[in-house]
Length: 567
Image 1 (cartoon, rainbow, N blue to C red):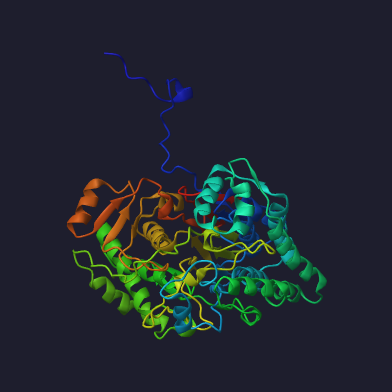
Image 2: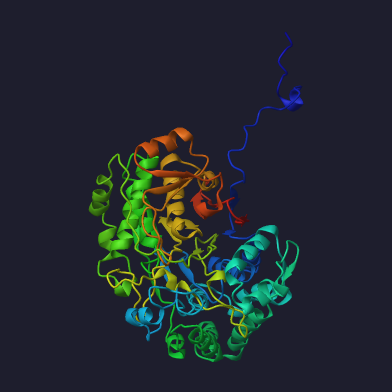
């Protein structure tokens, strides 16, 4: 019998055989000065350049966010939304920036139904004031150190000179074109000559570059403090020709926005609601987003035995509360703290039985207006300053306004046309949007997470946090672990379809576990491993090492183009 080959490499064996196989497809990044994880490699390099120029996490995050509006324009438009969370250095508090627009003051539920029936046709009807520009500018003014010109310069260069498409972006533009082909102004830029752009082709967006340059020039013309100059850029967007052009375009396409709606808009700063979980104070964007749903899901999960069934049922309980109670803070009847109270979460966990909960039904059976996706950015620096954002609004959501190179946020599709629903269309109201970044704090430690994916966003974030908290998984292990996505309540997107007890499970959840779920009444479908629609969690966490130094670790989800950098 042949002797078994020796291991040991330089010790004389054929192969070393002393190192274990990798536990993840990507390495978990480690840094001490700064870290970024964004939805595309080019966006991450923009944040890197700002960090290296001396900017803090907010400067880098805002620069990356604006760059994503150029590079990932398929997923997030400068005329769209940008929910933001910030933790300033040496602070245990997190603040939200409401980079989500409002309905026109002239709209009402009755007026919307009278004009469009039970539909919200894309083009103008669901348009709200663009929230992203105000969100980026207010975050920069409140917690950054740089000028708008400095943080917007990389995005301007990519819009003016263009950049080469990778295969993922080229495919995404082709998929989005199935929706935007109805608008010649969008086709002219993103499918020139009505021919799909290919990997390696250059995408140039001159009108978008002109819009960014207008804001930069307005800031440069202004005098006063840094904050006052940034405010001049805000006013250029919301109180001048840009607002006039956008409101006219929206009205021409059946919408309600006026110049007064633009001039009165602010992306307000407010304390972020939070929940104490496993020693972490977990903060999320307020109830103009699904942030409270993420907190509830995690809180209920941590009160269960942690089987797949219990985790799915925890998700259903939180989404049922979204349907029953959630509205923007200025329109919500119930105090959000009631929904996050320990005894209330205990009661929701105790409701879970061994049987799947029947789904909420949806009355609508008309063509939907579901938008493609979102992108996300998380940044952190050595001081503990932390930034998380999930900009959104996709190219299939509305026509590009040719003079400006942007669309007007169609996020009204996440409002309801039912007078009994808490998230119904209201004059000047905000819809409850799906993107919802999270920042957790524990002493001077921070943990930021953000994710794209519609109704899956808060599910994916909660599952990653639960896995880290309960199993000790690394960030990269947690973002690569198999996921489920429940669709047991009406979708957040008009016309809000639902599917009774439907749950998708990734291939890493084995067949025995899926059969157990079916036996408990779940309608189980199977996704492949690393399914695009399972979300893409970007996350960074700080913690002391054994020598007492602050260390930043980062995880980037392989399900999409997410990319991390750390120094």
